[in-house]
Image 1 (tube, rainbow, N blue to C red):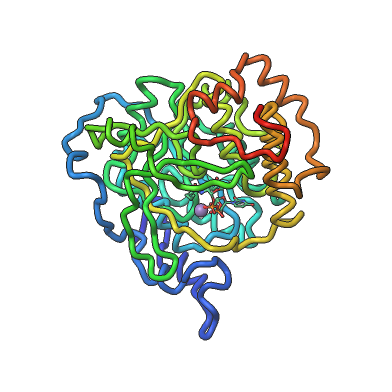
Image 2 (tube, protein in one colour; image 1 turned 90 degrees about the vertical axis):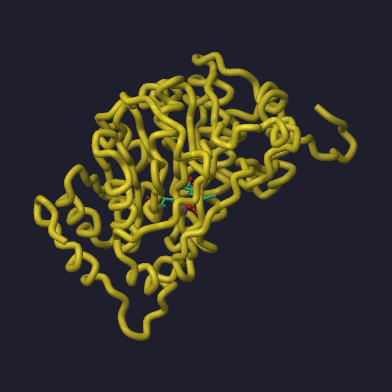
Length: 373
Ligand code: LR7
Ligand code: MN
């Protein structure tokens, strides 16, 4: 297929085919052979609840800038992410797709895609990690609403409208879809449970968890949003001025990890809310290992990022974080002075308030002898 400015899809993909005998999992930690076999325009099952198609949305939803950062993504998954957005979204809602190439080995992975209408490419001249890369993309975005995606996603039928609707009604809402599973082995598209929300433990380890039973019983309308204490991090819609007002991301966080807690605590504690909109579905390839290197090492980077989060947002409860993650004690984490200042300026609520009002299910650990806070 040839696009307006002459994008040769077949040539783009063929240039990066696996070599005979090469382990298809080696480069990307998913089965690249299976991904390469599939069409960039493949159909996927509409996994929404059957009452979703009859929900209607405002006729003047705002357009969005889609921001996708990546480091050495497989061409076939990257292209399918981009094309699923163009194929399954009304054109008027997509202002642009901003690819941020986080210093991948081959600049053409990104550059060639700018031959597709609406696709822009920014390339970092050194590895920055996904946090600073997203901020770079957000800073140049021209739409009033930002939509973040990982580089190995497929958006499903009418994915964007329900999220834009929620943000249009209230710009302080930060919204996520239900994240369906694209199998890392055979790329089958599988529906995820609609009864999950984001949670975590004191070590700041993310987990999906069941919606509390009282809330589940009270939910008579399966199309209504689900309040969530935290978001998984990669796939969400946020008003651009609200994102800027809240302080974007902590630009001293490196590579991967922790930014989802930092953003989630900040949104809740500084006057916004986080929700999962069940009529929006986006597939994501979940992997078992990171396919890329961490210049400072995976463990130290996660500690640095989560430690910055705990130091800025968790008040006296940060002691539980250190008890659950003793290896974080004494580790360097840079200065958090400007982030603390920002928190004060915005007059954000306490972590105690967050626990009482947003995540009462996270109970204090049994402390050895010191009792509860
Ligand atoms: O140095 C890097 N530079 C990048 O641009 C490292 C990564 N990246 C890109 C990468 O190519 C990908 O597009 O950043 C994106 C996310 O990296 P992944 O796919 O390795 O992350 P993940 O899916 O394992 O991790 C989840 O948690 C991360 C914490 O930092 C991010 O918030 C991811 O966006 C997030 N993914 C999702 O929320 C999708 C659902 C998965 C879950 C749970
Ligand atoms: Mn991912």
